[in-house]
Image (spheres, rainbow, N blue to C red):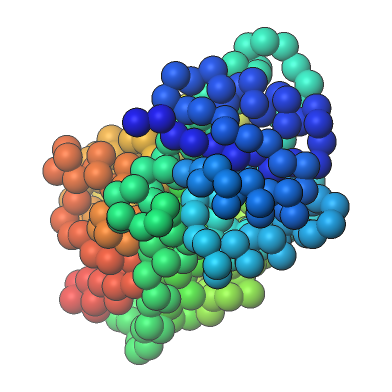
Length: 354
């Protein structure tokens, strides 16, 4: 089965470059390119593409406005092509809220090896986006919000003081994870053990993502800078430029950032965080693995499980891409599996029971 892709971008140079790198795959066919949303609308009707790549900023109609209309009238998997700027990150996060499956940064002028890596990334994301719609039998795709279900109900009530002092929660996610993490955090009470998180995204995006989570959650959400003492009621997001680990210090834990080589093609990597939590926190940890393609986090989650931690994975039906949770399930690293809307409640119930 060949995946039909329509590219929407106002730059002729970018349309050509994207067509070239995407079209290298034998299982992906670029069926057309459109310079603006008005042309794209007619081409969608005529060509019936499986996946759309959409530039954030375009003439005649803003990319967000077009995406909003598209998701109401003709939902399909969309990958945003975003600039690596503060403005680009804000708009891209809004696009993910509107239903875009994923995003990829605009390619930078570079050597052949860099473009080859970029091509592999965008082709993998197109396949994942296509699979996310195909697995649910939608026509031909669905918005990320629809795939993940409704928002989780807010969980209220006090937790035992010992939980707040001793426990640490570690969360990992990738494709579809911005909305998944938002769903979990926004449903949690203000008094929670410290939370450490890895979401695969570029360094220009993580500050905006942390700020957005902070406004939508009862918790205080920060982008980690390294050396922070983990505190109850706080959630720490790994910055896009560094791996994040947890290290024991005195009677508590601190964050530690590393600029070592990527792991599983990612930096930050979920495996790096989870492995450190297994070593440093052990049986006092709770692990959460959410939607995402690939296997990042599975091995680290197994180490957490073997160290006595309690782990939960998002179920297939509510995942945008059932990759990372499936990899963890396949190696028996999970203690529980739940829909996205239930994960916050399961975490709180587990904490109350211990």
